[in-house]
Image (cartoon, rainbow, N blue to C red; front, side, top):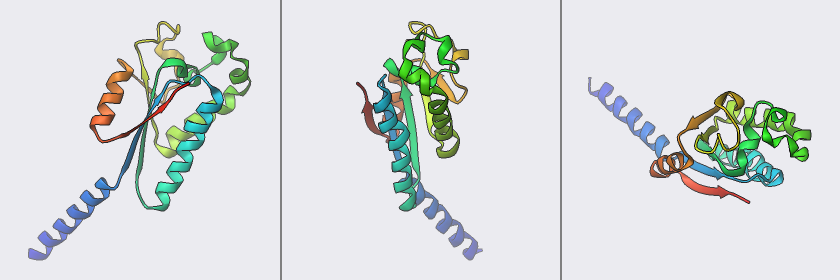
Length: 156
């Protein structure tokens, strides 16, 4: 019986230690700049994920979407007010696949501010399925920062 209790205590201790070693970050994504989005989100998160994996640390990422960043998360860019962004429209298929891979492969959580969706003429059905709509961006940022997430702004 003592051996079982000791074993359970060791397993519990290891579990707590692993939890403490998780690296948590929330990206406050407002940029509409495609190059900055690619550099900071698509490439940056992948590089950071690889780094922390090599250190055997969990890398927990949330991206809070608002401002000009709505454009990167629509189902069909040609059916939105962002269709005039020719640079993005030309590459949107590739960008959309890369974002989906981040969600599926890296477990990145994407949260979108509902407050300005109407202003951007977007309905929930216009947004890619792996994005969670939240009442406003401030709630997402407050919740993550109060849960120990490092804050990184990605703005224009």
